[in-house]
Length: 311
Image (spheres, rainbow, N blue to C red):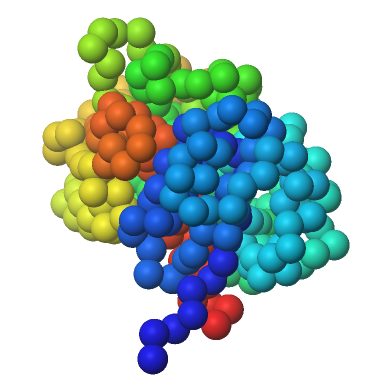
């Protein structure tokens, strides 16, 4: 007998929410679309949902709660904005739904699937950090698993065309949330996040650089840890790959890294550099929008794990 699928709702009928809906419909054996929720009646996401026989509402979270089958929905994805999510989460709180937050609001714990998902399956609200965080924090964690990381800096370069109004409105939250997650999830003593909106034409796929300052390291062990982590991410984001071999650069004693690392940090002797690229699966978004694809793919992985854990 085929197990019954878990019903989910997606709040946010923009690019991210629509891509997530398509992924659920095409890829998931455990989730079923119960509702697509927006606030713009003429949005492409709501129109596509209707054509695919997914129940819709353009009345936001209140419209979702008013739906006759709302009680059957177990998991709600929020693909709106940080500010909107705070209001949505408060409105949904009395109903006991699991919430997967794709905004930088960070009400619940940061979750990066290959690093710490199993630790947070009991949480009511799981935060997906940011697209840059989903791409780079696994690499920080991979280095941190081998040697203490005194400082980690990530640079996420994405096509300007893939940064919609929601992403642009959340730029400040992006850097703050990602920086905190580099420390809390990646294991770095101090983290820094930088985002670059690349206006090149034709648009370029997502590129990420991860710099870690460490002491003396076992280079082979770091390379192995990074490679294994990249394979774990690629299991649910097929376009995720290392661009080249991990690089190790000696840090001279007179280099002023003391401005980056916390007080009392041990000797910094090595800079570890990891170079990544993320190509989107083009389910709804263009292939160059790997930044959005990794976010929706990670959210799908989290929701499927929640569904399995609560059967």
